[in-house]
Length: 389
Image (cartoon, rainbow, N blue to C red; front, top):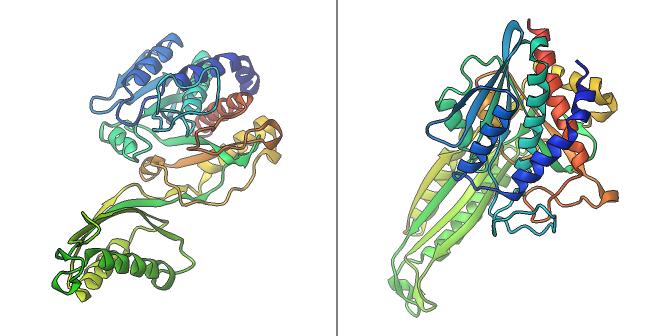
């Protein structure tokens, strides 16, 4: 099976599907029509073993190989972002305030391209390919929902990839070890007592206390956390007070934590918040919600199979390093259950004007890159099944 040639032959199909999905984005939790369209696309390819999830807008589909063997999964995410598109593309989003600014439209097209190649040559496969079509990646909840409905049942390994605006095209990054961070969200509530602004001694100022909490939490980042272990604490919102001349009695802060290890952060934050507030006669509480774990590519042969797939198709020089990052990706949930590998497909091309990055309102890519994503995905699946037969 000459997958590189097959991907080139499928290029027009891959680009057409990308443009379609780009034009009709749906936000997290709203992906009903996106799933229905993907379901129809898979049926049109001749894939019939499809199961829609009952409690989310995801689906799984199996391509049954002609020979017995393992089952390898290929994953795409499908949700868009609440971003007003400014690309000026003729196939730009038809829905105001919604855009595939992260590239999930391209991910769908890449998966469909790989599915087309593998389905048309399924008799050559030594096992089965599970297509995992996942909603709600942007909320890092979709993978958990898919897992709860047994999307990985019978799966022996899984592959995923992301188009990436800070990696130069046409390079691809696949390497073992930590790639993306653990994340949590939190809400801090600081409760004091209101009073007239001219008599602060008669109240307990929740705003100044909240300021102390924020400052002390940053001391945790710089003076308590091991500096060799990345940690970012971001306070994204702060709400408090009702009027310019009233000592505020309550402040609510919302934020996110990113790190490569999840242990002790919640415990330390709670201690800092409660003690800082107590010292200023306030009450401080922390609501801490674990999101997804750190995304770590396996050090075993699964990552090597993916790297070899890239080298086989486009040469070893296509593989480039990419610094690990503190963004999060709920593909990590799959990686906790089965051997997994996650790659990044570079889209930055200053010569062609592709300089916007993921989540920006002008994010776009050279569509000739999409077939490469499909080829690598299909090559990995075929090579994994061959290696494990």
